Image (cartoon, rainbow, N blue to C red; front, top):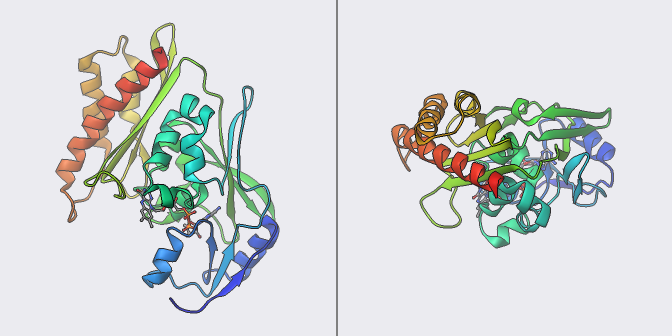
Length: 289
Ligand SMILES: Cc1cc2nc3c(=O)[nH]c(=O)nc-3n(C[C@H](O)[C@H](O)[C@H](O)COP(=O)(O)OP(=O)(O)OC[C@H]3O[C@@H](n4cnc5c(N)ncnc54)[C@H](O)[C@@H]3O)c2cc1C
């Protein structure tokens, strides 16, 4: 690891000013489970590292029936997977968090780091897409909000401008008659990155399925929504086996996976279909229960 200067600011404004001042040479440090690994491997060689640890208010989960869920960027994956409201109402997020690495990693890894790193395979990303997350971004110049489906621009890149920091994620309230699920296809049981991740979320209205969201991870340069498949589920009632099959095919067609050492693009496309079918069905079952 090469030498670097370390900062521990106590406000978002201070952290933002440092990030902007050392633009291109500085990196934010949250849990460090991506950054420190990269620095050790010398794929990341920042001259300045800015810790977010000492900034009050970046960590924590709050829920209000009227305004919904707020998760601070420094909230750990372990807190997300064990939180009762998230497990009940925002289940795909709890399941996405629970898929990250090992329990030791999840005690360090933050939601802000998972999304800030912008890996197409990030386990929390598909859940954020289907739960309509709004990303709160802070800087020395103020705050702005970006919908999660407008955040990612490519592998490892986002719309964040120099000096901008993710401060929190906000999610609209989820009614009791809604359900969601995240499933991840991997080779090893634990400590393996997704070669396909799919999250689905639905709301029921008089038995009809509405507001279907399907999010895909690891099968395109960024996490994406399978909008064609969503439209198919929303259009037809009841959601039969045949409709699920059509949606699965549409999600596969909308994915743009690559072939690599672990598996072929064709296999990934097939798995997108399988996981779409399963997660939509489970989301519906959960909404009904
Ligand atoms: C052994 C191991 C297994 C893993 N398995 C998985 C897995 O199964 N699934 C998975 O998705 N990930 C996995 N990861 C990757 C990693 O744990 C997660 O991506 C984690 O959520 C990163 O969070 P962090 O707090 O550690 O981020 P850090 O490493 O501190 O930061 C990651 C990146 O995000 C930026 N960043 C951090 N916080 C912010 C912020 N608030 N605003 C803007 N940018 C920010 C940093 O500058 C850095 O570029 C694994 C890592 C390891 C080491």
